[in-house]
Image (cartoon, rainbow, N blue to C red; front, side, top):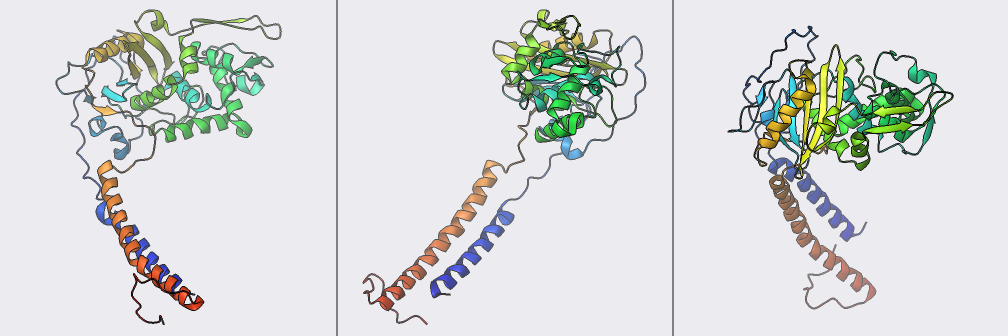
Length: 404
């Protein structure tokens, strides 16, 4: 090995050691803030007490802080000085600005709740980017075998052939559990429906919807199936960012061609707020006896796009749609700068700009020092090569005698 390579290797070794050490020395994680004090959420009392439901699993304290410390509460989080939020029966809710990503307020935003059919939005978030809307697929017996005929169905038949786009319309307009099963099976590839459910859970993890876990593609109750009002706001932001999703959600009536002797299916959008609430872009309802009423809706007013997500609501006095209207009205009345947190982007946690600057300065200083030290070694090595080849040494660099 030449003197140059030995010297350079030693310098680089020292440099790498310093580079690896500098971030550990400079980057000091901030001291965690205390969790927000618990303020009771304004509650509307239903005329009939809801049935008792099992307590959901506890939430990881770190997950409670996603989006900001004020959201780390099982109570109310609203901006300082804001008017009190409306009283609703929903046990968890969030109002968020989908354009800015600011959370305007919430009640138990990260607490786990059972989703019912709003789970279908997670199915759309996971599989809509993967599936060609023009692809035509055949309905299998397995898609329909475990569905209660009295449940919410699009009306597809075994052996029928439907485009993916028509299945999305059936899923989002009619809340078709049959459409959910077909889409999950097709999108799940070799693993079938379970592969589709796995894709939903992967997508929830990617967007940091930490309390969301799917057991069924449709939102029909399944073991360990939960979400949170905050997670639903993340999912709403992802889905409503898609033009095709918004178009499906805003469709009032759609005709699905007849199949194998079965008449054509007429789909009528079950989101009645489309024609009741100004600026309504779309919404998704849900209900099971365990979840109670659930809802996700988005409205636009003069370019300000707000989402409302609510879980665990009762049919009276307002029902989920009435409570959504009250919460949207409250949100639109707030100052556009009002905020108690943010909707995270789904990317991995990053160092703050100041920490990156300190780390970068440390690394830059070490690399600069290494270059200054290494430069004479490069020149000496070059001079040695010239001497061996008979070339004269440059006059700017003094001759210190032969190298060993």
